[in-house]
Image 1 (tube, one colour):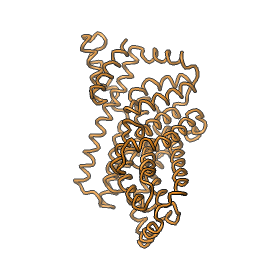
Image 2: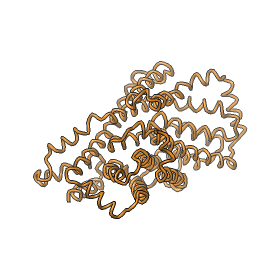
Image 3: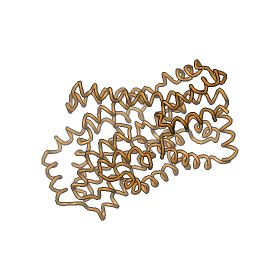
Image 4: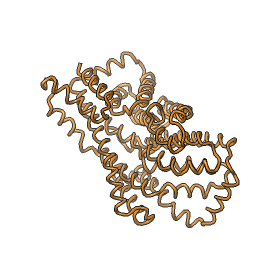
Amino acid sequence: MLGVIFGVFFVVLLLFGFSMVAAYGAAFIIPSLMTGGSLYQMSDIVGWLTSAAGKTTYVAIALFVVSGNIMSQGQLTEKIFNVFRYFLGRFRSCIPLVAVLTAIFYGMISGSGMAVVAAVGAMVLPILIEYGYDRLFFACMIAAAGSLGQLIPPSSAILQYCAMAGTDEGQMFKVGAVIGLTCATALIVITLLHCRKDQGDQTKIRESYEALRAEGIGKVIGHGIWGILSPVIILGGIFSGLLTVVEAAAVSVVYACIVSLFIYKSLDLKGLWLAIVGSVKNVASVAMMLAFAVAFSKLMDVFNGGEIIGTAITSVLSSPQAFIFVSIIVMSIGMMFMNPIAIIVPIVAPIAASFGIDPMVYGAGMSGIVAIGSLTPPFGVSLYIMAPIAKVEPFKIAKSILPLWGIMTLIIAIYMFFPQLSTWAYM
């Protein structure tokens, strides 16, 4: 009964245009007020919310958002692009390959798919179009590659999942890296196959490459090495065990400030302040959503909601494989309309554990579905970011991007169904 009351209020408020955070908050408060506190008191809500505070995962999310924003404002994209282009420029498919690699690599810096699509798309897509490459195909490819920024560590989707499920971020990062890099490899192969027919204006490309070579390897690498080193330092510290995820996030902020202020000098103190203020706005909404999601799991525990739902699901789905399949379908459909991770994770994570499913692989897989969910219509955020950059209608991009989304979904599903393919990463 409690779940029905909460769910009805939550869905109705979303339909009336409330934000996810506002709908969550109101769905907690309204039933309590209408029942005179007989279901639960307002003080209970406060207790549930404060119990979610202080998690180190929240600190890591906030710090990675700040560092990603600073690096985005610090114009690292162009410098990374030129490094890849310098070394790969002799390949016929150089520009498309470098564009995709830049999107993937930048995702390893920012941890945000939307930031990658905006920053990389705005820079490299006009270059691809100028050199005669297919506008629609590469709008889709950059959006798809950019979406992996939420899966390849430091992944915002994985951090959010871990905050709600209570799993280890460092271990799940390793699985996420395996799955994400496999998806990235598939996109690179598709790009190379496409470029066998779509070769662009090779004369222009060679002239541009020679101009870049004329600058000299020292200058190109000297400008780009600081951007290249960022994910090496962050992920190297985490995977080697020298840094916790939170410590690596803190290092990334300090590193971003030093590079942007003193090495590239692409930001001044005012620009740094504006980048931090913009990050705080993003972090605030995410933090509130996560706090309410944790509070929702507390609410489920108090009224045995998780046990009731778990019993109902396990009575219908008799095998772990069936549960994984339904999880992928439900999350994929949910991502067409909003990011349902805060609603779904508190429910499915305990059920996955009861089935004996590896929590790291399941969590990384579900985070991957969230990451590429930004590509699906009607409300895929990446579609609406890329559309004005490419000067193509969002639904035209959506139609062409679905095969790429399908391939990445298939890869994620394979890893979830066969966890031994990725568990070696943290064992």
